[in-house]
Length: 305
Image 1: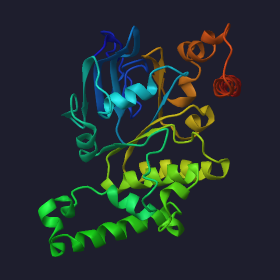
Image 2 (image 1 turned 90 degrees about the horizontal axis):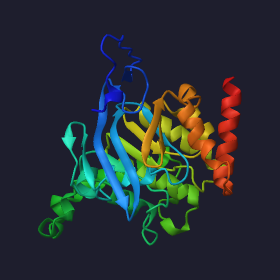
Image 3 (image 1 turned 120 degrees about the vertical axis):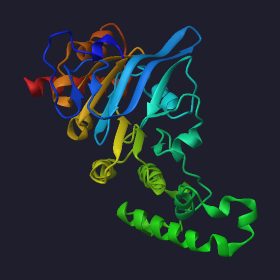
Image 4 (image 1 turned 90 degrees about the vertical axis):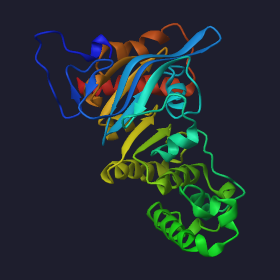
């Protein structure tokens, strides 16, 4: 553990239910579901991720934020087995995931969605959902030839899929091809499909990116509902108002490192966060998304005053 995670000798230890000690990069959590140490990833001469120590609290919604190029999605890819780090170890629910491929990570209960959805466009919505179920008997070549071995399970999987689709208000699209869905509906489908494997941790990479405003509230409600159902949520997001609205804990990255952690109302006021979003842009032309993000930070800081 990094020195930041351990209170100085003789200092009082504070606990807020999620963390122990003063909120700072690498602060210890009361019940962490992910613990990562010395995770680095370099592309050419650029160190995209350089995380000394990070713990993600269980049964909470954690937002991973930071300016463009901070390393958020790269860290996501490393933790879920979609990329390999140069160095580092990490555990999920006490099990080491270093070197474990993504499909095995998902089987352990850690699933993710993507900024660009991965729905299979030439399959129906229902078939996409069925693919999300784990331990299917019919996946074995020999058993696939003997329907009586898997038919009952297939019926149970379909019933579960229809129930989840109804909760996500996609039941009217059951027989539609996934390619025909809107961007927001594909986000909903990807989140719904993730629930087919009964995950413990759901990781969402920019769940609101490209979503029609009419579906934004629906997605927010579903993310909050994941926590209500006992799941842990870790998500990357650029919408600061959304982060403050639903996150229990915020981790801030800049230039590959974790520069701040804390409850959303507190972390927004930390100097490291202000510098990450505002200080690095004085002499740069910003894109539309980043400009909106900077303005949102200013609004939030103003609201807190």
